[in-house]
Amino acid sequence: MGIGGVLVSFGAVVVVLSLLARRPDTRLELPAMATIATGSFVIGGVLFALGFLLSRIGRNSRTSAGTEGQTA
Image (cartoon, rainbow, N blue to C red; front, side):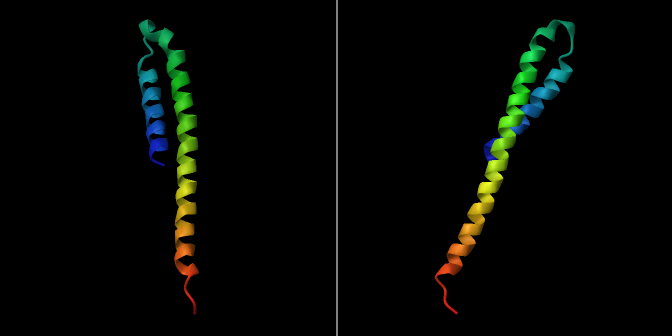
């Protein structure tokens, strides 16, 4: 989940910078900044979701592995 959160945060920072950079001399950089922000959001969101799911699966497998060898 760590790298996904970092990429989502990076995307948010780029969006804020692109909103603040709406001056005439920086208009040419806005499409590139929007592309980077969108890509970072998408990739970061996917990695964050995968990390969350993997941690849930890992937690469930550790719990079931600990109770597997016990008898009643």
